Length: 361
Image 1 (cartoon, helix red, strand yellow):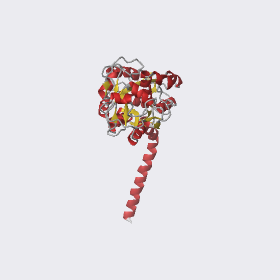
Image 2: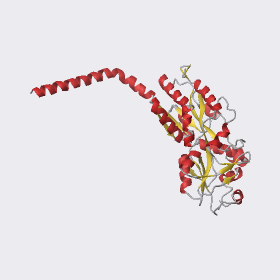
Image 3: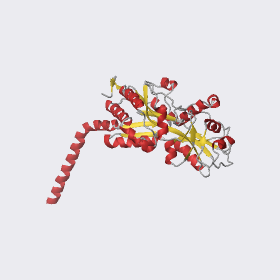
Image 4: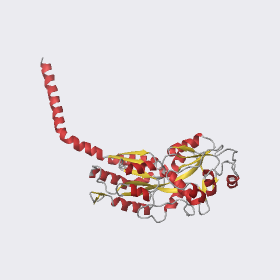
């Protein structure tokens, strides 16, 4: 009996404490929920920097408590999502066009986070190291060169055993900054490409080509189908041990895509809005299919009932990406942004406001 009374009293005490906690917690639930929401950052866009962003956001979260969910859906999707205000930031391998900027419901800013390279990857017996001129690259993707033992390819690669095999071309099917970089390059080196196809995140490809979604989709198609060639981001090619062509640049040198040869293309002046194309650079040792990749956000962060804390968390994380976060670039085969680009990005992030006041004090 005594034990029953003690147990009953203990249970009553526990219930009382529980009810008391629930009652007092009622006032704390909303602030705690709001605080948690403020630490949840959502981004979407380019697949090009996805391996790097995943690492950056993971590292930043370890010390900040910020959890960043980045959806690798392609640059076109990233621009659309930020335009619709369904993400905190968008990501694109192509800087915004004038039309994109005019379509935004409010003023946006964009800045580069790293550099990467589009590479020409292929699947051939023996995996020969090929050299390609701009003429060869344009000819293959225009479907004017359709055999691997074509005399133009053979002339540049006399020591390679080129098979009498049809060339299968793979490209991106989604709206893609990787495609923009590649078609921007092709438009600069081929008048035929410029007039017939042009540059864009998505273009009307010649008939007879295969399509894949994302860098990973195109990389998979190349690896699985002998005789296939396509353009993918350097990091994807290296991580998957894929064959990569050396490309003849505007200075007349054959350049293998590396972090160093990519970085060299970005050493010039950077405009204040950072909207600059560096493909087909005439830098002596620069790899010609190189580009920045950008993050896009609204300049005024007080929208959609966002809190100032959330805006602050976002901008602080982006600030970290262009400073401490750059240490993550080289290990993942991306090139860090040069000092002039860092300075331009700093100015842009300092211009971001909440209620008209700078977020970064």
